[in-house]
Length: 268
Length: 283
Image (tube, rainbow over all chains, first blue to last red; front, side, top):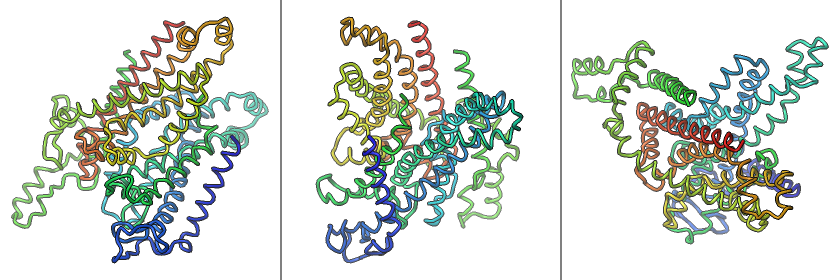
C-alpha cells in the first residue's frame, strides 16, 4: 500500500501548490462578478463555468481549497495541542487528577459533536465579516475537537510513565521535569502526529457541513462548505456535470488524507 | 446499572449547569426585542426590562431552571414563540424514527458485508465494500442528503449510509483479527463449517466489542440528523436545532443538546451493559 500512500501525498502536494499560487492560476478574483454571464457553462475563459452570481467557479474552488487546506490543519494543531496538554498532564500526573480529567473528557465526548458545535457557534455572532467567520469556524473546531485525542494521549502518557526506561530514568535521579522533557514528550510525538493527521479530514468534513447549513464561513469568501452549498440549487445530477467538480475535488482531497493516515487510523 | 444511571444524572446536571452558564452570559440575555419598538413609551420599556431582568446569581438562575425542568417546563422558544416541551413532543418521534431506521439499516449493511469478508475471505466483496465505505467517509452528510434529494431517493437512508462505513470497517477488522486466532484456525482445520466457526468461535470474541460500537453509532446517527433534516426538510429535532442556531435561540438549543446527550448516554450505557452481560455469559 506504500505506493497508494505516496500517490496520495503527491496529489495533496499538487493541490496545495495550486492553492499557494491561486492568484496566478485563477483567471479572476474569487469575488469578481461577470454579471452578463451568470450560471455560464464551462468554457475556455471559465474552466468550471460561473456560479449564479456570475463568479468564476474555478477561481472560487482554488481560493476555497486554500482556506480549507490552510485552516483545517491549523484547527487540528489547536486540537492536538489541547489534547497534549490535557491528556499528557492527566497521564503523567495520574491518580485522582487523571480520573477527574478523564471523567470530564468522557462527559465532553458524550455530548453529540454536531449539536455541541452548532450550540457554541450560535453563541458567537452570526453577522460578522468573512475573515472573522473563518477564524470563528476553525477556532471552534480546534477548541471542541480535542477530547477524543486527549484520551489516546493520556493512555499513552500513562503507559510511557510506567515503562522500563522511564523507571530507570527516575531511579537514576531524573527530576519530573527532565523525565517529561527528555523521555516522555519525544515519545508522545508519534501519537500526537497521528492525532493531528486524523483530525484534518474530520475538520474539513465538519466545516463543509457547517458551511452547507449556513453556519460556516460567510460570503463572499469561498470555502468548501460554501462551494458545496451550490449543489442545493441544482435540479438534477446529469445536467451541468462540471458543477460537481468542487465535490469531486473535495472527495479526492479527503480520501487522500484518509489514505495518508490509514495505517494509524484502523483500530484492529 | 446504578453506576450508569449516576453517570447520566451527573452528565445532565453538569451539562445543564454549563448550558445555564452559556445562556446566562450570552450576549443579549435579558434583552427583549420589543424594546426596539419606537412606539413604546419610556415607562413601557422600563416595565419590559423589569419583566425580563436576569437573575444576577448564576446558581440561583440554574436553580430556577432546574425547578422548572422538574415540573416539565423547559421554557419557551424565542424564535418560534412556543413551549419547548411541546416542540420536542411534536418533533422527537420523527427524529427517533429516522435515527432508529438509519442505525438499524447501517448495521445490517455493515455486518452483511463484514461477515462474509472475514469468514470466507471474499476479496472482491472486501475490495468493493472497502472502496464504498472509503468514499462514504469522504462525503459530508449534507452533500449526501442533497444528492438523495436530487435523485429523489428516500432521505432517511442517508443516516444508514453514514453509520454503514464505521460499522463495516470496525466489524471487518475485528472479525478478521478474531478469525485469525489459533483456536479458530484449529476449529476450521478440523472441518467446522464457516457458520459454525462464526457462531461458536468468532462471535463470542468479537460480540462484546461490537455491542460497544452500537452506542457510538446512535450518537453518530443523531449528529447526522441535523444536516439530513435541514436539507431534506424533515420536521425533526435536527431541523429544530438548526433553526435555533440561526435564530440564536439558546434556551431551545441547550435543551435539545441535553436531551440528545441523555438519549446517546442511555444508548451507550445500554450497549455497555449488554456487552458486559455478553462477555460474562461467554466466559
